[in-house]
Structure formats: structure tokens, C-alpha cells
Image 1 (cartoon, rainbow, N blue to C red):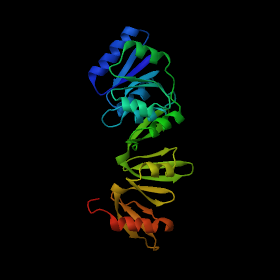
Image 2 (cartoon, one colour; image 1 turned 45 degrees about the vertical axis):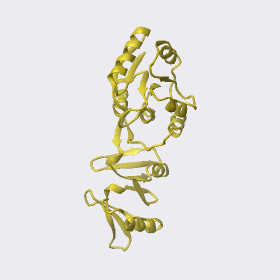
Image 3 (tube, rainbow, N blue to C red; image 1 turned 120 degrees about the horizontal axis):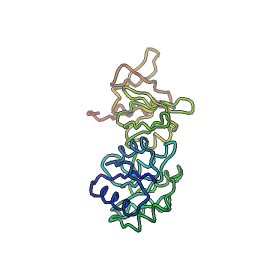
Image 4 (cartoon, rainbow, N blue to C red; image 1 turned 60 degrees about the vertical axis):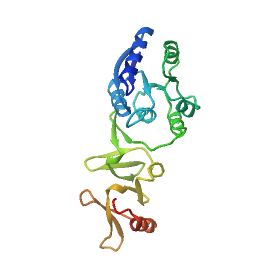
Length: 248
């Protein structure tokens, strides 16, 4: 069985590798030091099981597991943590196994034996069960069976297009299967709804102005791109512009 080890501490990774060697029957195909690396390595290496720390700098293990759900053949996930409260909060749903550090060989062997794949429903439940719910740090885009991670700070706007949503950065454009309603709830403090089909990143808004036709538009800092503000959202956008902090 192919295993990917994910932990920001080298000693912890070495310990897991040593335990797997003692148990036998498992091959460590790679290591990662944070959630972003974990998703990228899992997409490249296609492991059967991922042993992953929860609390890591940048993208944590819970978010990484959610992104891995987009893989064509997602791995089983066993979380490792030194923080018991995370285990209690995140695993009431009994979606996957977890191991409290320091990890014992018999406990690891048992978890590996019963490891099973995380379903989309279980991933959402784990995310919602966090002690401190937080928005994703990246958007995962599925490209020919692989996962492309787009940092949320790079996203200029989300634009609804039929049953998909366009994710637009300064240099890229991708399609994801999500809804603006969900994205608006998750990133309410980072994006502004300007139209029923558009969410714009606040950090990319240069200002609002009237078009030659007399309607309002949002001008972006990058390039000369402008997005229409719908009549329904005009009052809210203008109110936001009036109350906008000077340094944004």
C-alpha cells in the first residue's frame, strides 16, 4: 500500500516512516510539509493512504483533505494531531480515523487496516465541525485528472457561467463546479457581490464609476477590466464604496 506522509515537522515524518517500516507492507512514496504540498504530491503520486497532520502553516490538513476529494482516485486520509480538541470537533462525524501524537505502532497499524475513503459529504461535515470555521486558502481546479491550486488572494473575481463558475486571476481563467451563493458565504469578508452572476475581490477594486449608458460599473486595479453592477446591487455597492477604508 502506497503512503504519503504530511507533517511540517521532520521528526514527526521520520517517526511515521520508521513505524511504517516496523509494521511492514507499506511503501512511503513521498512526503510533504504543508497542505499545499500535500495536495500537489497526492495528485502526482496517487497514494492509497495519506497520513496528515491537521495544524500546519498555510493550508492545514482539513482543507487539504477537502481538495484531495477532487482527485480522480482520492486517497484514504488518516489525520495525525497533537491537539485533542481538533479530534473531538472534527471527527464526531466518524468520517476517517485520526491519531493523537505521540503515535503508537499498534494504533497506527489499526488505523491503516480500517482506512477508508472520505466522501464529499463527510469532507463537508468535517469542515463545518471545525472549532473555528475558516475560509479556504486555495480554490482547487480540476485539470485532466490533476488538481491545480489557485491561491484565493490571486482571484480577481468569480463569474457565474451556466452551471460553472469562472475563476479569474490576472493571468489565468479556470472553470469550477461551485455556486456563487456558497462562495459568497465562504468569502464574505474578501469579495463583494456586484451582480447576480459576479463576486469581485475587494482588494482588486479600484473604484466604481458610471458607464456611458448611465449604469454603474466596478473598475479593477489590474488592466482596464470593468464589471457591470446590477440595478439590484447598486445601492449596496455604492454604500460599500462610501464606507470603504482609505487604505484598501
